[in-house]
Every structure is written in C-alpha cells, then in structure tokens.
Image (cartoon, rainbow, N blue to C red; front, side):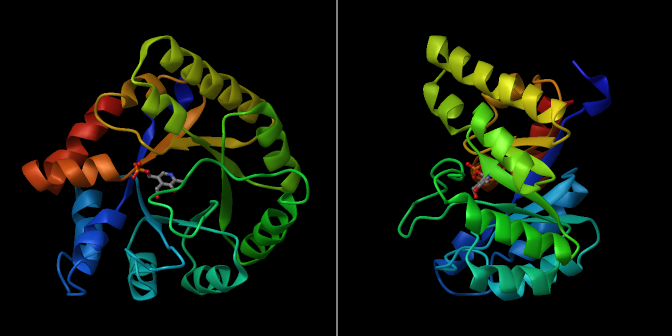
Length: 243
Ligand code: PXP
C-alpha cells in the first residue's frame, strides 16, 4: 500500500440533485447549492456529468460550478459539440466516458481499440490544450490501461460496476482483484488512479483499500442517502468510510 495516497479522496457527483429539479423543470433543488453543501461536508471534488440529452446538469449549471472555489470534475463523451461546452466552462479536470443514447447510466468503460481510440485521442489533445487534466473511464483491463497511457491521459477512472453488481462472494473478489491489478499497472505507468460507478456505503471500503487509488467518484448512493439524512450527513458518512 502506498500510504501517500491515503485517505482516498471523495468526488461527489451532483447529477441526481439536478435530476430531481429537472423532473419539474423548476429551480429547486438547486444542484449548485447541493455542491456547496457537499463541499462543506468534506467533498474533495465536485463531479458533474454533462449528457447530450441534458437530463440532469444543464450548461448553465456547469458554468456556475466551474466558477465555485475548489475542484470541479466533469464527465462527458468525446462528441466535439460537448467538448466545445466543456472547454468553454474550463473545469479543473475532465473524464471522457462512453455515452449510448437512452442509457440509464454509463455502461462501462471506453472502447479504446479497433479505431475507436481515435476520437478519445483527439478529445484528449483538445482538452489538454485548453489546460484541463484528462481522465479516461475504462474497464479494469491491462489493455485499456496501456491504451490510456499511450493516448496521453493523465488519469484513469477504473469502472467499478462489475464489482458493485457482484454482491460480494467469489465474483466480487475476482472483480476487485481486476481493479487492484489495473490500479497497480496504471500507477507503474505513471497514471493517476480514480475509481467509480455503482459504489455505495456497503461496498466502498474494499475499493478504498486498493493501493495507489487517489479518488472515488460517487453520486447516486450519496444523493439517495441525502433524501433521508441530509447532504451534510450523507457526504460526511461516506468520507468517514474512506478515512
Ligand atoms: N464515474 C463515472 C465515469 C460516471 O459516469 C458516473 C455516473 O455519472 C459515476 C462515476 C457515478 O456513478 P454512481 O452515480 O453510480 O455513483
């Protein structure tokens, strides 16, 4: 374990406070106010996913978030029109993710082979030229880690969906080992390591124990918990699990 990486930092994804607002196309709950509260409660980074269908975060939210003090991290697909918005907003960092029209949430890591890596390469170049640090959301596979490195990414976010959906047992152990190995390789190659998707209060600790992991990005479970206990307690509780 590299203790310099501890405690693992918490990126709080605010999308689903915006989902609630968009249910009525109204002004509340205000995701920017939620971001401020999450930050006060200990979030190290505020994360938002700008989707093509704008079903949660809107462009205006993104610009406001990027003006707040502290780090804003944006997830977006490599579509040039989406990148144009993000390069204008100038968050601290950007994570490139795949996006399938109609998906409920991100469905695994980027494909970085058979020509599909070209769009990611162009996007990385564009974002880095605009001064942003770039992460790639990838499945925990050695080939994807190597591709991320050769494309010039600064960070990889390892997809934890398979682990989160495994509900523990042998399958969970295997999924966790894959994340562990991918994190090790990424670190050896000089990449920073994040992880996320599907993490919650029950399954986060095992992921947080992975060496070289710098941050986890968590949204849905924190927003869900906040409905019952409030944003402050929901974020603080998650931070405690990472300590
Ligand atoms: N990481 C990435 C790359 C994502 O696309 C998402 C969902 O927007 C998350 C993390 C957060 O996932 P969850 O809401 O399941 O915590």
